[in-house]
Image: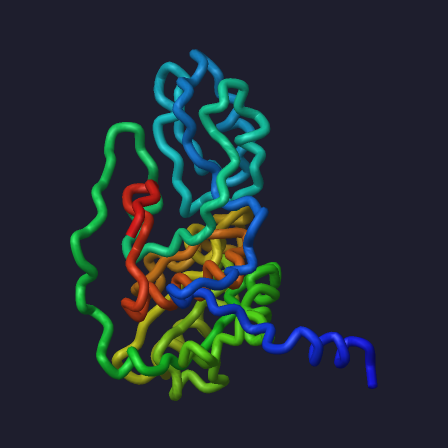
Amino acid sequence: MPLWTLRGLAQGIATTRWPDGSGGDDGQQGGYGMPRIGAEQCLDDCRACAEACPTKAIRLDTRGHLAELDYGRCIACQLCVEACPAGTLQSGHEWAFGVRERADLRWSLDTDTPPAQALASRIESSFRGSLHIRHVDAGSCNGCESELQALGNPFYNLHRLGIFFTPSPRAADLLLVTGMVTAAMREPLQATWEAMPEPRRVLACGTCAVCGGVSADTYASGHGLEGVLPVDVWLPGCPPNPAAIIDALLLLLERKPQRIHGGRVHAP
């Protein structure tokens, strides 16, 4: 008998209990998430963070101070954190950035958007018991696909949540899109969407699907799903980890509340 089989039998069930409220491990302990905004003030005429950002996610005011951080464009590379001399941008461990509205991914110094009092009942009751997903790679580097593949392993075991992938768009409730939506993939993506029966939903998975990522607006690539398909949940990350994808799927199903409002984390 192989050694890994003996080890598995000795350890017993390996599937995490997360996101069950009774406890469990989401598998992301110790990993970096999106950068967070510290309490320190920016230095005058310091543009180090904006110059280091490869996706232009940071906007500065006339003094050179941080004015806006678009988490929808952020790839969590930590370059802005390393470049910031004042500690305004700091390493964070928050990775579940799924939102219903694209605007909720934009942090601004001038606004502090409060969380909604209750989720709108937008999801049909037929989705609550089970959800079938058709995935389309619309120009990804395969980083997101690697994380999607991990959803089927024994640890995350996506099927236990009543969520399944299907090869046919005609059997799908949700279109999960990864990649920047290249010119070559725009027509197949639209055809997949049109083949899905009503009601149908869309999840933009990964920063490329949200805004185009580091290769946005080149001769062959687009700027993500904005203006292409009606998106129900936006999930940035490069790539988003398996737990973040599960969190976004449960947000879509209204089985978890949205925690990000105006680019700020609010406790549920």
